Image 1 (cartoon, helix red, strand yellow):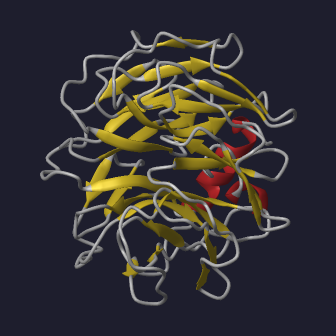
Image 2: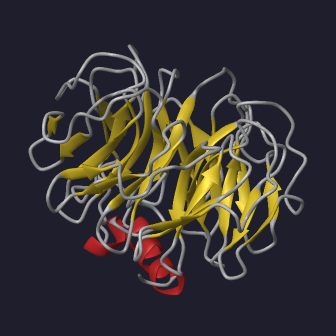
Amino acid sequence: MRSWSEIQPILQEQAAKGVSGTETADTSSFSVLAGSNKWHCGVLAPNGKIYGVPTDSTSVLIIDPTTNTADTNTIKGLTGSNKWNGGVLAPNGKIYGFPINSTSVLIIDPGTNTADTDTIKGLTGTGWAGGVVASNGKIYGIPYNSTNALIIDPTTNTVDTNTIIGLTGSDKWQGGVLAPNGKIYGIPFTSTDVLIIDPTSNTANTSTISGFTGINKWVGGVLAPNGKIYAIPFSSTNVLIIDPTTNTGDTSTISGLTGGNKWGGGVLASNGKIYAISYSSNSILIIDPNTNTANTSTITGITGNTWQCGILAPNDNIYGIPLDSANVLIIKPKSNGTLPSDLYLSPYFNKF
């Protein structure tokens, strides 16, 4: 895993190359299954394919960006509703899905295209929404309804729910981001606080960045080339900008984004901009961290259903994961730059 000091100049260099034209979005190139609440976010695997984590769907969604095709037949038989919420790519090359109602961690092996729900099971008090691979190689699940952080050791396939505890409340955080300082920042959904997890000491702090009132505020966050984290507005009218250097949160710089249930998760493109995935908004929110401005007028006319989170593929297109939509959302940032292959898989970006 590259350090942030190595990654940041690469991101800045590629972003400076700009774009070749106006960004576009495509919702008709390829379809998947109809239905609602199907997959919640996805993860890019070393084989170049994107694996959608099943919520109500009984199958894993496999997107092949080289052919723009989707497969829902290879990994199937995953019964139940509201099972997993988001996932990460572990150092062992496997994808770990976070249980929101399931009592098992979902382990997807892209090498064999198989799924395992038996190795890590028997979890109680479930309710994690997204997570992050820390620099120590362990996976930290972000508490949604659980009062504990979920710590997964992929080398032993064991879990720990007893070390980081006492995080009371419901619908607290959705998604997390690994910051340059090595800490993990959980994005407040209904919580009034940013969750800060220190993997070095295995402790959590909810008092340093706080005071954010309201419910259903932000879903997921994105680390920008400037080292700041941009939380994506769901029902909030503002983008939350977290500065890990000063441990402060800013909701006044990018504001005035009206409406509810607008965007769910976001993706950093090679051009340095952040693209928020349409949930019920008919436009894509494009955030420029260089100027701290946002625009919703470039990519519009997106109607019909919802997506949840997205992934930047090695072809530099962004693939939005269909939650209720029957189609995959493809955003074309038209970046002139491109990233080294390992950065597409980096824990800083390849997660929810």
